[in-house]
Image 1: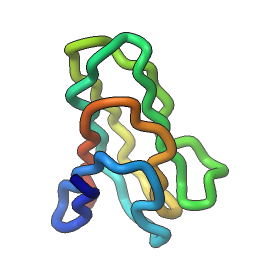
Image 2: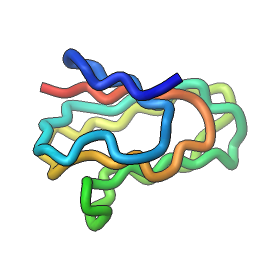
Image 3: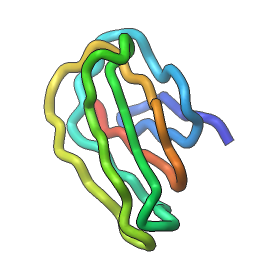
Length: 88
């Protein structure tokens, strides 16, 4: 599969650049985590600012309430599952 970045909910499953444009993120939902050692890392487009850095819990979902503008989005690490980014 590949990243879907249309509408107000983006679905990410492929590591790499998502957008280099400013984006207002309302929240992030990480689902489909398979092991306790799975990692998620999302940075801004330049890689300088961490937006989310998390270690998963097997068979659970994780939510992150961001509610702010970011200078682009780069999915740096996704060991398992899917990330939904809710944008405004």
